[in-house]
Every structure is written in C-alpha cells, then in structure tokens.
Length: 42
Image (cartoon, rainbow, N blue to C red; front, side, top):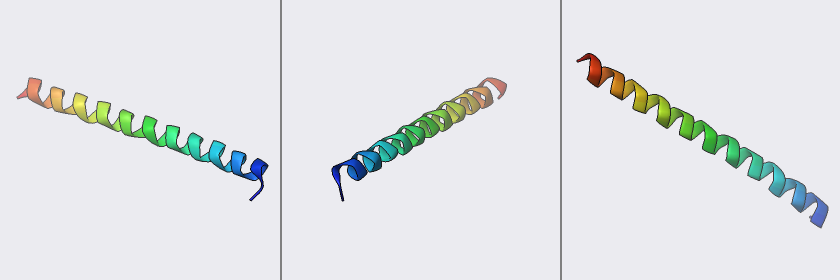
C-alpha cells in the first residue's frame, strides 16, 4: 500500500468514525428525551 493510498484510507475511515459518533450521540439524545417525556407524562 502506497503512502497516498494509506492516507486516503485513513481519511475515509476517520469520516466514517465521525458519522458513527454523530449517529450514536443523536440516538442517545433521542432516547433521553423520550425517557424524560415518559416521566413527565406519567
């Protein structure tokens, strides 16, 4: 693997990792607000 290919691979992997992180944070926030809404409604 050439240095250019490796740099491209790492850049793509970093992008996927950031997207996954944002997805996990978004789901966590969603579940938090669902839980709060259920507690306030009870």
